[in-house]
Image (cartoon, rainbow, N blue to C red):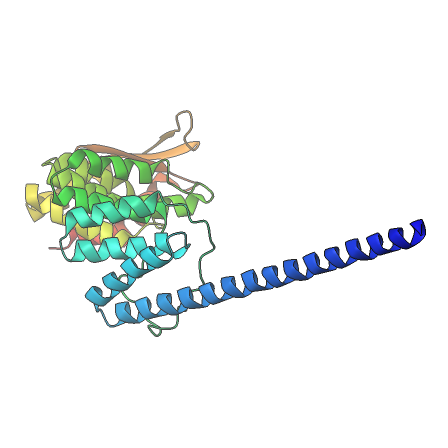
Length: 296
């Protein structure tokens, strides 16, 4: 009799465990199916947003991005499209709306993965609004918006963050490229505050570096220089700077050999590598950036 009851008890426990395991599997499957369905819906919404952007329908895109934030508030695409929406507001000159969404998205930490984005929707050439969502890119947009409302303190704050804390230091060339791009926005900031000297100084350090955007930097630099100098004065100053180039010993933290020159009242120090002084004079004379400054 005892054996019989023990057998029944064992069978009951076994059946309970079996039912529990079955329910667990069903729940797990349902959860997985639900997650797949959600991801599918998010991807479809994301693709619709991109189509709107491809058509430059910013009103529809803004509405759909707002829907994404409302329906899927933990989704990984929030940050990416927050940057896009912020740039749409800047494009529309809605500065405060841009600042609100950009600051929210910059500090947003998603709890779900970024849905795969179809990069072929717009064809081979991507839409102007589809920018990177790096913190540096956010900072540039925020600086633009803050300049527009006359808040120069916050404009400079975000540029300084991008120039230091947000800078990816994994690649020296990448750092130069980033700081080169930042230099144009730094110049815009300084110009807005009336400080042309700082604007010129920032651009002078990067306008000849091959890893940066020399063409854009030089155009900006020449535009500012022409506010203060005649073209004949620019030509004379550039030729004087090349004539008085120096190679000096690097200070602590600098390369061993430094190319040192003063131009438009600013001292520029760059890595001289292994080139001689004469080689540097010849190189500078052939640089597109120098040629652009010398052209009428």
